[in-house]
Amino acid sequence: MQRILPVLILLISSTFCCPDVSAQKLGAGVLNVIPPVLDIRDSYSIPLQLPGVDATQFDGNYVPNKKTLFGQTQSVVFFRDVWQYEFAFLGLRQVRLSVTQADGVEKPQNFWYMVYRIRNVGKNISFEEVKENPEFEHIKKELKRDKADFVAANKFVPRFYLEGWVKEPGQGYVHKVYRDQIRPEVLKKIQFLEDPNLPLLDTVQMMNAELPVIKSPSDPGVWGVAIWGDVNPGIDYVSVYASGLTNAYRMQRNADGEITFRRKTLQLNFWRPGDAVAQERDRVDYGIPLVDQPSEQIEICKRYDLPGPLLRGYLDSPKADQHVLIAEIDGEVNLKDFQSALAPELDQGKLPKKLIAAFADMGVQIPADTAVNTVIPGKKWSFMLTAGDQTESYSVILEPQYWEKDFEGIRFIKSLDYLWIYR
Image 1 (cartoon, rainbow, N blue to C red):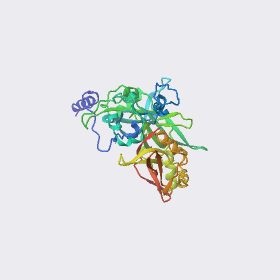
Image 2 (image 1 turned 90 degrees about the vertical axis):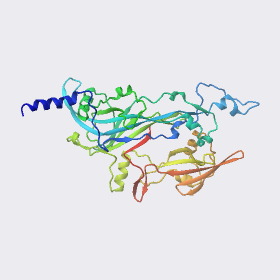
Image 3 (image 1 turned 135 degrees about the horizontal axis):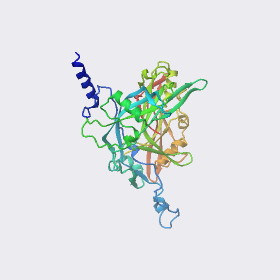
Image 4 (image 1 turned 120 degrees about the vertical axis):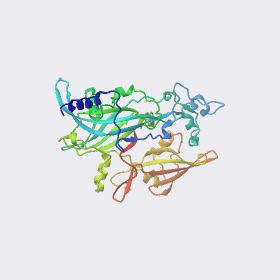
């Protein structure tokens, strides 16, 4: 037995240091895969002034204003190629490690971390695909391509935020935000714990990694880890926000008329009972907690900022042979009584100013005195627009996204483990 023992020790050691040993295979369901989801509305801008053109407005003697250089450059729609990566992760975990502090002393510290994988599966929407789509018949101006988005999708510039709520004495729940940290010493120890043969990249290293389109479904992709330190131990309702997975974004005008950008972001939801006792042993569950008490479930939904119903405006387009989504705004549904603040105005035959502005941002001008017909009170409406000898029909619908009212509580429509948001 004494002769066999040294040989066993040698074999075990070589398993960890041998560079050509492949990473361990994961069991079914261990890796949570988030497939790319592209929306055609991410591929074009709201009508904007053509950059680089400083035209003067004037009334011509022989041509209408809209045919002048000024008129033709004030409301141009820009199309862009849109791409998105596949994101997968092993879970949100905690670990207590002995690490060197700023004063040079080694002390135990608790860390949250997420091991993830990035793959370029070739998911994209091209300008050529979009510009021929009959959905864009309502946009009368010339369509320009945004050359800024010509860069091929082969880099991942990640940003990871861990956000959650901590119950503070006398203050109720307080929102906490943590940005992922670059900690080489911690990364090495996490890699040893997870899989010594699987190289893990930090955020900076990931930015320099090449991401060519995968050749087969078994392609390993590129693996990284997001690390958060000094997280309040009382945190429980937790979400991780990952951006950089796509170049998709939405544009909108604020109250001052300025254009703001909201980037498409992946929101991953988790939950744990918050306490400071043996944090590394706490299980962090994927998803949000479901309870029987309706009022408690509503409060939980608030913690995750789950998107509520939207007020959407559609064009009944014969050319597209469908209802074409033109504009959408927050339905402003109150979680106390589940009533929309905008529905009463529509039931009274008027269009809300916010909805008129949203239509205008997409190139559809609606007179403020346009008459609205109620199809289903509190839920669906219609109106007509006439331009010259052409009359177009529109519908406005209050539509749920992830949840809707169900008796005294909430009924969930989609999985709440993850969702794509714009922020």
